Image (cartoon, rainbow, N blue to C red; front, side, top):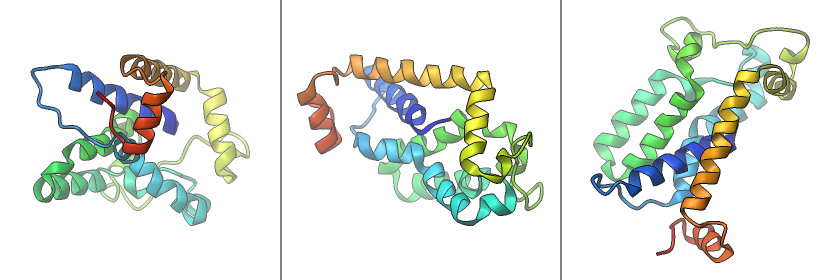
Length: 179
């Protein structure tokens, strides 16, 4: 999933829960919430670009494993309960990426030391940029997830009136929606 969709689904889910009066949802810095939703990619993509993609043929590495997600959940929920919304955004990344479909990565190292490799079809496996290009131009089911991200993002913008420049600027400066 592309970063914009991770951000859109996370912000829309947060706003949906915030709108429900029966749930105590704390105010958060929306900028940090987006960074938390991108967390696994912010860790793994640079590692893949620097070394691991050439070696393993995968850009979904350590931060996409169940081991890391459990560690993040246990550490933050026990020691930093105020970070719950950010922890949920980080954990939501695994849900949105549907990581259980990539068992070599998700259950690493229980299934060995390798990571899931995208299907090899041509020369795109040698170049991380081409691998993403081929994945998103040849796999139509990915388009539906991105379309859902676009619709979620539009719903969030309309619901929070971020189409108004002053409101958008306030969120960008403070991370909070103005009253």
